[in-house]
Length: 260
Image (cartoon, rainbow, N blue to C red; front, side):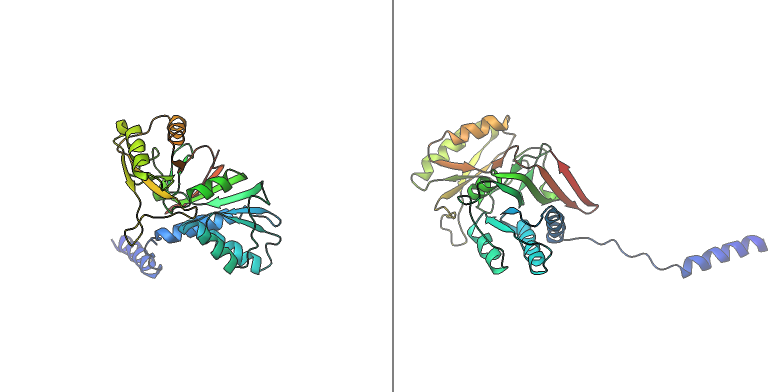
């Protein structure tokens, strides 16, 4: 009895002397975005022409590039912004800028996404910059997409949020009806995007956005893409098919890198 008690006492004493376990740290969505963005910037090398994405996740990447330029850890970088907002941000950070007319081949683009499916197809454009994003990211040798784990879906449209389509303002209702009828079998509802004042949201290109809300899958995405682009009045859509070469996902358990 005495020996058993002695062992138990020693065990309890050791337990009492051990440091208390720290509670698990829960990262915010913005912190996860920042982690993914910083990881993506590790792909950047001096002398590169970079596509600079738009949105809350891409903003962290642009900030990081600006920091590394100021520290002298990156040099001779040229950025191609995908929106006026990103252009203003990059200029404020001292990032030299150019455009596709001067640099038709881009070494690397870093941008976020609204949805990522298991095949690394993306939905982008809920921030309204899908046309310029697709032009820039379609011209790059490597496109690194950065997301937090909430953006992973089983199929495009699976989040229940919008699939954006940029359209010309002329007779936008006609175009919206065409889009809605095109995906009637998927329970599509087409809605004009408005700004905070209730007026039509206007893109950097002077166009409108029709948001498509889908109840079921679109089916063959390439067929769906082609059908959208055949509608007169459509400028571009927010499906980025077979464009991302790498997707970096930040989650509670760490970073996951998915490659084509």
